[in-house]
Image (cartoon, rainbow, N blue to C red):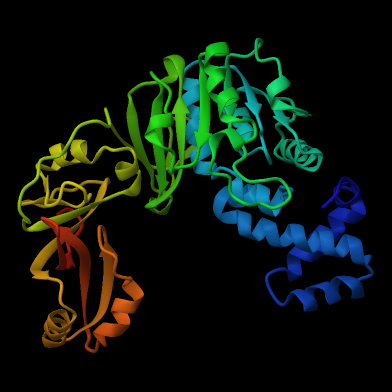
Length: 410
């Protein structure tokens, strides 16, 4: 999309085209295009409206009902922060008495909008003209234009001296190709600039990829990994007095449904586990219960802290499965009861599952090279019972754990 197409969508005729596109989106794209043309909508406007309608449908999972009024690009939507994550970050900034924020590289504005909803005055900068115009339009659609302004320009040239805090989400894809960038100094803005922000504005927050190398974490910063309903979605570095702990794993549970604050506003249930990220969990034998930690806990190197909470041990020092004698309720791991521990043998496992009439298996793995779907086919399951399999290593040996779920509450 270019600026002319975006401008056309923001006219009364464009609004009508968008409304028509939303009524036919989600089905056969050729039939949808034909329906708009038969309604007298010009081809170029119809194509742009259908693209937006489809992107808004996809964005519902990230932004909820707000997606219906947003302008989006495919790349921008893919990289945008989920609303629950952005709202939680904004609430934390507001609780730290941040009143003015520079968002350097705002993209479509997901984080800037969340900060503005929290009452923070946001000065957003975006290098791409179309994306910057969309971010400004999204602020207007959300009724937040008085708290959020968008400047099209170079984030590295923005004067940050007049704000309380800085948020930066460096682009980790190449412009034009969309390919991922793995070398930090190839980010935009580059990593050296990003990590240097905290020396200029101590209260700096940086959104980073969840695969961030711990060696790149600046001294004194808090590194937080965030998962949503068990999916690891991002990491963030909190600098200056925003840093509360060395490492944090934050779990958001959208599927649990929103909670109401005292003010009546909605929030997603969240849990966090803190620690140094340097502790090591004790090693011991396989015990009655298996705990599979949330990926945010694993990436934050907080398995040892979780082990201490659960009175659990590792069976292999390099694999993040925990074992305990009791099932304790925890939001930080899935708990299963182990019924059988077998040295891995396809023939022996197939015989055991056939004997127990197991026709459905959930397959988890840590430290195993086996492909779950291939194993599922090779097992040739039949029966009306279900089981969970954990493929792993115990004291270095390939092992399969046959398990059953632990009822809620342990």
